[in-house]
Length: 499
Image (tube, rainbow, N blue to C red):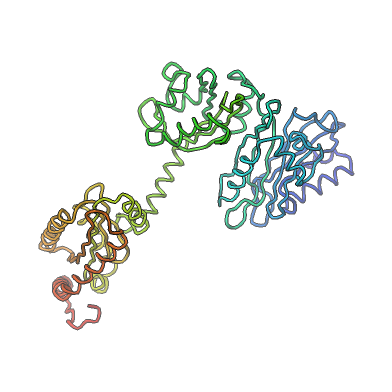
């Protein structure tokens, strides 16, 4: 870098050093755009801070250098850059960006007059609203791509990209920068060409598709076919190939959604969703699908849509693992209160027969105090394992915390009472074998017609479980005390306050 700066005239060297220092130390907006002379050539430098340390100093920087033949480039031949600083509410445009928007080709903030002119020239309201919603999402994706469609057929679509350069402590975007560039001609372009390549480079390096809605033909790139394990022979170049491969459960949010976007600009000109698609071997692949309408006819119907597929299987796997950790009690391996609360809301909507069976482990504190918490943990795991033997796949067993478990059973009370009798008999057999004593108290509440809210049933089951616990406490503790004395050889006093 020192060698590079040495080739600049002294005034420009000091100017560039000062500008870069402000950007790299976090004193600027995180984006630098300036022009200078280098080896007798006019050069434009665009610098963006991608990552900073805790003090705001740049750690990762992305910069581009362009040769300028004249003081400014003709509008439409190249893209421009913009930066939005949320705290000040300023949207800063460089000269090329302003020129592309049909505004005065001078770098500076977008004022109200220019914004009104922009909205007249482009159908920008929906795109800007989506961009604002994206900025409000904590830890939103670091990159967004939108398409600005002109209000008249003679106008040129523009591709807008946005990247988060700085976030606040809550993860909300504070500084955003991006580019604005001509996208495609206002009429349907032939399938293929350099415009598709540019879009692919701007988005990602995975599977590319290009749908010509006038003919129904779809171009699937080689990387797209390879991702699915297909060839052009096994995956014909038409829309039905994709439709047939989409998972039935994801059909509405993918196929139907894309058809709505294609049918009318009222649904927007771009879309993004995650879904499953069938590979050639029959397995399911999780993908992130994105697309943009590049042109429409006079009636608003899409003539062409271009998009990308990104393989997110590993990300989805990580998400599933995390989701499982969030919903599973780490000690016993059954569901936790978080999962139970969500399930209770769902079953209330279904309005079918519902029984809630509460179970409480008697004498857990006595086991903890006399044998240690490792024994108490083992007792809880044993309780979970014994209860799991008596529920169906569609039922739910959850640990509320401490020594309480809940069984959620979508069947009539008569069926559950028979099942409870089987559980009690199995516990008697377990305790007869002389293992760690497992004494449970139960409480049952039911609503065969689904009219009673689940949270009411939960309170009823808890109250009935406490009633049974009081009734059996003395006998249950006596059996546990006898087992402890035989196990440890130590006398457990009858008046032990821990009982």
